Each structure stands twice: as structure tokens, then as C-alpha cells.
Length: 418
Ligand SMILES: Cc1cc2nc3c(=O)[nH]c(=O)nc-3n(C[C@H](O)[C@H](O)[C@H](O)COP(=O)(O)OP(=O)(O)OC[C@H]3O[C@@H](n4cnc5c(N)ncnc54)[C@H](O)[C@@H]3O)c2cc1C
Image 1: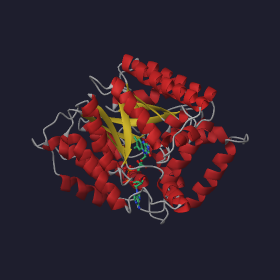
Image 2: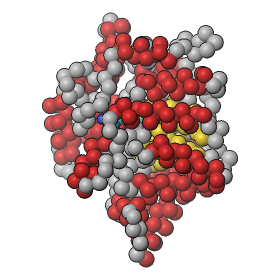
Image 3: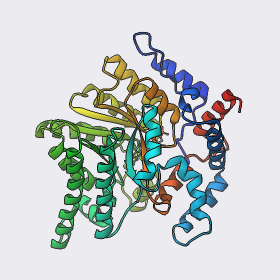
């Protein structure tokens, strides 16, 4: 659970940040992430009140702790009403649906508000070849489904859904001598990720390859670089993910760009801060190696913002996705786009937030004409429980303050006088 560094921005702070980054040139109004009217325009009064209730529940640490334990139990043994309760509450807030077809209304709803969707099959780390093939087939199906819509330009995939964790760990180690059997296994992994990227290319789609733990990331980078080399010749089909909470990733973006230039392909760069901070620090401490994580939040923010700047400076050869709920980082990217007079809808300039979170950022960016999408997780309720637990924990208050999301929803409820 997050204990530190989570900036809860007051509405006044958001307004101040917007002013600091300045209005767009040409007399356009400044982006204002405190504008809750735009943020929640897609929600009826009833939906808004339900969202407020849900975020109030999530704000309570004790409830979230109990809920998380029940959630994990519910994935193992059948609990009466468990699925139905989850499905009508947090699942509805943070997931598109249990299947692709069930996610369609959510995709269409976002599309009406100028927001794209990134389909993300929610099943987490798998263990055997049958499961890995199932994940691949699900990704291929998502590409086919998305290609018919026009409002889902990207699907995302996690390599741990396609490969055994221990294999990735071995390839990432300083002594990656694989047995004949492991070599065969790795060939299958390559075939799976290649099938996904190849199909995405054929269907005019893109693929985000998610970043994971540092001790398997070298294997993920290797696969991502191979796929970018193969498919990013004329346009950016494949994106690698850069976790800027790592001390070495700013340099790695530059290194990846050099490699892309040297080998003649375009770089796809999705920038995130990183989701495994506590796990990373704990492992480093237990195993006695220097933590790969930045010393503090300010250092992470600094590298994230510099990483975005670097990509925008080189936007002709780098497609960048600012995957963040951080108001400053999103405003910085928007301000850079304005400053350089780039078209807001340039295909190499993208923003992305998770479904159900930071609607103030997503819908204000969309209303101002930027390329913005929601990561839309879909899958059976039991499969997405770990994802839902992470979302509820993110929205829990450790201090008793109101969470960022709850503050915004309450402001809109008050504005509508409901
Ligand atoms: C569309 C999308 C896709 C994503 N894909 C991935 C992915 O592929 N891989 C992945 O790992 N994560 C991914 N994430 C999650 C992401 O890494 C962050 O955990 C999450 O978005 C919170 O960061 P933020 O930029 O939104 O906002 P903020 O709330 O500003 O930042 C919080 C983040 O800052 C960092 N941080 C907090 N405290 C400290 C500290 N004391 N010292 C150093 N750093 C600190 C942590 O990374 C923390 O998550 C994704 C997020 C989004 C929105």
C-alpha cells in the first residue's frame, strides 16, 4: 500500500498549476483540470452520486483493508454475492466489462466525449504455456475487435501474461545461459509477442508493452526493442514503457533513441512513474543491492518531466504517451505542445489515464483537442481482482484527508446542487 509521496492536490493548487503553465497561445483558454463540469459531463446526477459514494468507501482505510482481504478470498472460494457486489461497484468504476463485447458501451461512451480507449486484458501473471497462448489469443481478438471500431487505436499487453516469470528473470540476469528447453520456451515467447505486434501492424493498430519489475525488465526491453525494430519502420506500432521512478531510465530513453536511430526505426515511448516502488525497495534491501528507485518523489517527477521534454524535442522520430494522473506532468506536456506550435492531435503526441481515474485530466484534455485515451481493463471479475485492489488502495487515505478523486467528485456534486 502506498504510504508516501502521493500528492493530494487541492482544487486551489490545481488552479495555480494551470496558471503557472499558462494559457495556450492564440487566445485559447488555459487547460483547467479543476473544471469539474467538463470532467464529469458524461455522468448523470445518479451516476455522479454513486461515484461519490464509492470514493467515500474507498477513502476509508479500514474498509479497503477488509475489502482487499475479502477480494483475495473471493478469487479462491465462492463467496455468496461476491461477484455481483464487486461487479456493480468497483468493477463498474474501473473496468470496461467482463468481455470485449460487454466493454463496448463504455468504449462508445468515451468516444462520444472525444476520448479513445486502450484495451487491456486484465488477467495477470500466468504460469503455463496453455495460459500464455490464451492471453495471446485474447490480445489477437482484442486487435480484431478494436480494428472494427476506430476509437481503440491501441491494445496493451504484459509480457508476464505471455512468458514464465522465472524465464524472464533468468534472461534478465547477469548469467543468462539457457538450457535447450528454455531456449525453446523463449522462442515460443518471441512467437507470441511477434504474433500480437504483427497482427496489430496488419490491422493498423498499436501495442503498448507494459513495464514490470526491474529483475525481469531487461528481458521485456529486449523483446520490445526487437518488436520496434521489426514493426516501427514507417509508423509507430510498438511502444516500450519507461518507468521514471527508476534512476537509470532517463538515460535509457536516450539510449533507446540512439539504438532506434542506429537501426533505422521509430521509437515508441510510453512514460509512467512506476507501479512497484515498495516491492522494488524491499527486494533491494533484503538482497543487499542499491535500490533502483529514485530517492524521493521530487526526483521521480523531475525525470518524468525531463523524459517527456526529451521525447517532444524529438517528436518526429519518437511517439510519446504521457501515461500519468499527475496534473503538472500533463500540463507540462500540453504547454510544450503549444510552445512548439505542434498540432494537438499529432499521432506522436498522446496522453493516457486509467478508466475511472483522473477524469478531470482526461476530459479537459479531450475538450481542448488533445489525443487522450483511457486504459480500459476488461476480463472476468475474478481475473481482475488484483487490479481492482491496487485501484482501491490508490484511492485510500492514509492521513484521513479526502482523496484527489473524491475532492473533485464532491466539488461537482456541490456545483450541480444534487
Ligand atoms: C495509462 C497508464 C499505464 C500505466 N502502465 C504502467 C506500466 O506499464 N508499468 C508500471 O509500472 N506502471 C504503469 N502505470 C502506473 C504508473 O506507473 C503509476 O504507478 C501511476 O500512474 C501513478 O503515477 P502518476 O504519474 O499517475 O502520478 P503521481 O501520483 O504523481 O505519482 C505517484 C508515483 O510516483 C512515484 N513515487 C511516489 N512516491 C515516491 C517516492 N517517495 N520516491 C520515488 N518515487 C515515488 C511512484 O511511481 C508512484 O506510483 C500506468 C499508469 C497509467 C495511467
